[in-house]
Amino acid sequence: MKFSRAALLGLLTASSAAAFTPSHTFGVRSRATELGSTTVKDEDLFKGLDRNGALAKDVAELMTSSGSVSKPSRETQEANAARATKADISDYLKRYEGLSGAAIVYLKLLENGVEVVNGYSGGAVLPLLDQFHPDNPRHKEIGRPPIRWITNSNESSAGHIAEGYAKSMPINGEHKPVGVAIATSGPGVTN
Image (cartoon, rainbow, N blue to C red; front, side, top):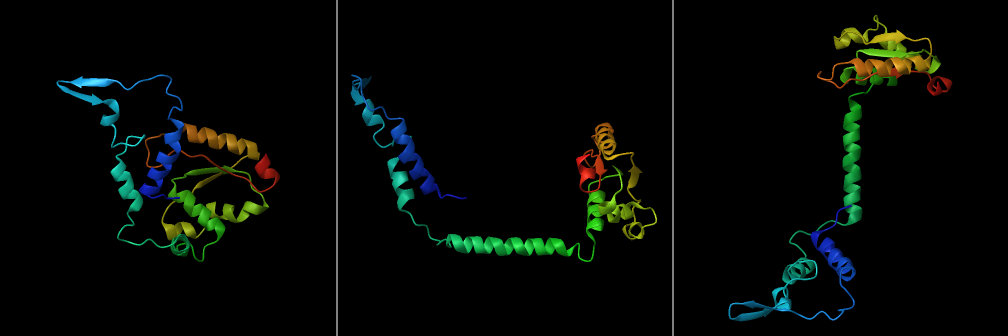
């Protein structure tokens, strides 16, 4: 949420001024400061400032200025932002038209520099596992070697191996070290 400078300044001066102003003077008297032959009271030094140190004329100018450009209403701004967001999402998704979810996941793994994936097969992830097969035609289309698939004895060992793999990779590469474990839905994920 964006606030104009005038609104913030007004809010700060209204709320914090009362919080830091003592309600009792407790016998404090105004001191007079001698500057050569001129006597100046402390109150005169700060007469043009409000309690937060801002010049009163600047605060008044910000509060009364309407600006030369009229701003659209909040509803108009939200509608424009929603249209722009939908257009950006639509453009982004056009890159993946005609691809299955498994193919998109595989491409994202390639984009992030994943070289090895650990996991345990199951019904829900079989389309994704097909992407890792060396004879998949996608590898020729992309022109990159396939990601290495390692089948583990169970899902929990896949997680431990992925963690160890990520910790043992060099940090100075193009991509940050990452270990990937794949498991089927349900009990596979909870294991």
